[in-house]
Image 1 (cartoon, rainbow, N blue to C red):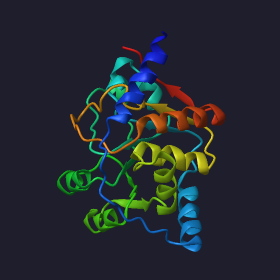
Image 2: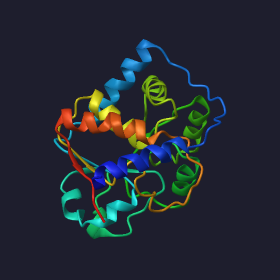
Image 3: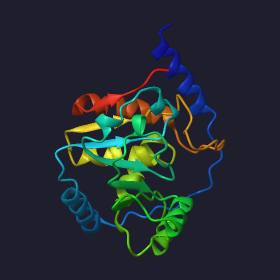
Length: 222
């Protein structure tokens, strides 16, 4: 059995062991006008010729891609900080999150990024917008797209899935994907046990998207 196939099987089993009973979460589609307007704002924001999306998998530290990451605008995720320049790079333009702990973190410390990409997948997360510090500009992820992803994966989408899907919908062509292995390794800064996401379904979907778009995927082997 190849190492890649073994990793895929292990990933599938991890997805089966995700939290089985999810409390009902309400997500309201805002309607056509609001959805189109939200997409227009996001389209206007992503005018860079190249973007690097830097995930939080432990495997990010298996190779030194820091210089390559710093060659383009970067999107990073949730509460992760830069702890190894050689592997993670230093450039930090955008942060994607709708995590309460992340919002609180940047009420206490000055952010290194310029724009928050706020990525809710349920209505109650929208209340966190009131907690975003006034010195941080933000864009709100289209709820319709979160609803679509939740239905597709039969689970709440990860923040990484939301951003990759958005870049696909906006047809952003020059994208580098780092630090994504869909839970083949753990999140490097967290030992969270409960996991509501379906990483295997996301992996199957995005491996095809990345191939079709011609994006560069940097999956690091230990």
